[in-house]
Image (tube, rainbow, N blue to C red; front, side):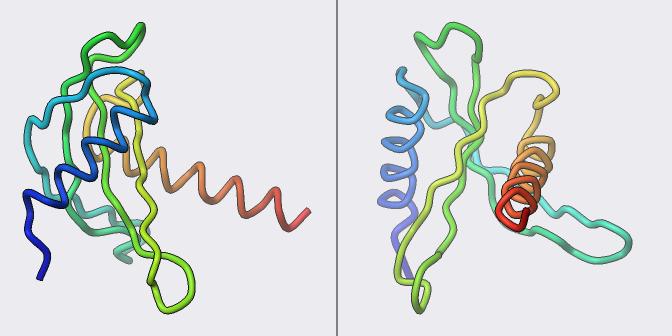
Length: 107
């Protein structure tokens, strides 16, 4: 099992780099998104306070495994810019973005 502090440090670096500003860990929030009775996403969202970003005061982030045998790690970072106002709405925005991207690839 991975050390939580090591994980948070990696997520913080990703948030800082992807948002091009300072990031400070605030809290971890469990999120479960259910659609039509089915769980479509469940996990922990890391919340970061941002400093120096022109539009967002906060960012929501998590990582997920990907690639062959889930060997790779991809960080998802969503800025708190309306309609994203919470960890749950960040997850919903990410799900919608991924769905649109998949649909575009199919066409």
